[in-house]
Length: 160
Image (cartoon, rainbow, N blue to C red; front, side, top):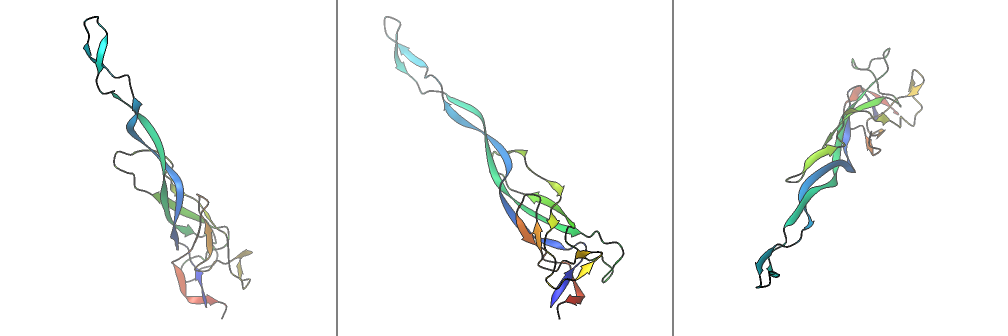
């Protein structure tokens, strides 16, 4: 039997590639080697090591998306919480790890919104929208697909 997902239900963690941009200050080339000795005519006879040229180089890394679903239904309660329906929005946060020397540039989201995209196959509706079940599909703010994986009713089932 399928459990109805309730407001505040969590979504399974999803990973999105190339979501966070960061930069590192690193060697990007080498300059003209300095002269370290001259011949009797004043011409360079020996060169030292070329000096490194440093600059900021941008990279991307993946982020893990986690969050929960906020129900929009106001007039129905199950176990004191509103049921989640197709179209309800998620509240998502990104987490990531940068390598040593990496400096964050862009891409992190706090409070971003995805949405519930699949309800139930038994055609159970609340206020004209399909009720979502534990395991229902969610499309995250980054375009990855995940599922509702916690916060389901323990007493109300659909489908048997």
